[in-house]
Length: 494
Image 1 (cartoon, helix red, strand yellow):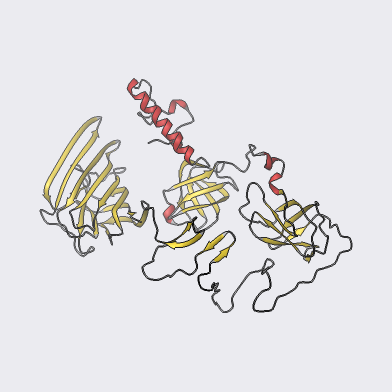
Image 2 (cartoon, rainbow, N blue to C red):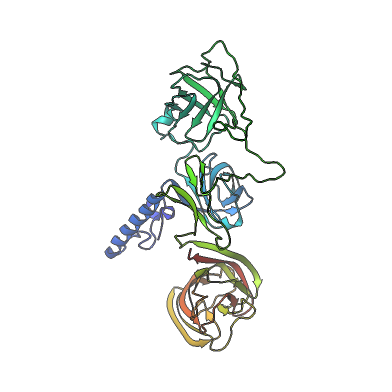
């Protein structure tokens, strides 16, 4: 299905075959298909409209840089939010972009993680709002996003800004209206990020009445404390004493005053409630007395609203594709994948840019029941049935092939691929239930260019005629060697 990213800003260029486009003179019966396709594309965009997918895919250059073909510096502007599909979905901001033909190099600041080669060929999306966007809400236009009124009955001031800041950043200026006068050292908690001490004169705690009730107070975050930049109300001054509780049991809340809780000599920090007690961190309550041990690999933390607890549970949901391994073949006699097991019922090999050293070659499949020590190649080990559609010099043709007993499965289904420039193969192979005590099934779809611009499309299915579990597969050329990109994915049951 064509997406909005595939459409042209030039109306006449949106003339692909229905339903992906509306070519001149298309049949009336195709109109409804085009309309439905457009509706589906708009709805798909609407579901994730905060991100814009321009159809770009990048190539990892380092942990914080990647390249994209052509000059896209006007699109990848500094401070714009970015979403990158890697081994996991990464989020961050564009730091800079520079163009040196033929590629644009983009430097990013990621919230977590770093870029890997898993992002190569995957989708890169940008935040819908550009940093230079003038269509910002009123609270941004008038600075209301950095002002709020405190409603506490003490000098532990608490405010809620709209929208919620991700974190406190050095240099962030905040204004608040104090509900009460302070008595000694005071703190400000912004959107439950945490109480931060308010200092005056750079590093001095506040004295009584430095902040009056209903006073508008301005502070700036220095990375550790809020420094008060509005005048103090108390001209008398003075510094409050810091009372330290040195007993093993605290007489009140522990205020770390912007410092860290650390351990010496690489020791652990153990927070251990008594008995069935829980661990509370802000609004989160953790079920800390659970038993953790063998058999709980890949468990996840889940929240149960009934009990109000966050607990360790077996992962649920399922249905997630994950990359198992990938390889780039160059002049290889075979490409193999081992370790197929019962953690997934469905495996998928995606192959692209596949070329052969010998003219008239096809890509073949064999399976192994001994994890790749040998691959079954008996004359009656496999069944296969395939179809090929092909265009040669403007002439369309169709081929069928079937074999109830063969020594391999042909992923080109009755055809072959040449070895000249631009003659290549790509497609997808699905392996179903390899660990079950039944015949292991396979299906495939391949697209190939045989003599530019002539091409073919092949699809089919087959099976290994044994009930022994299959745990490895082999892809090999019918003659010569093979080169290209091969990736193995699995559809997790959990």
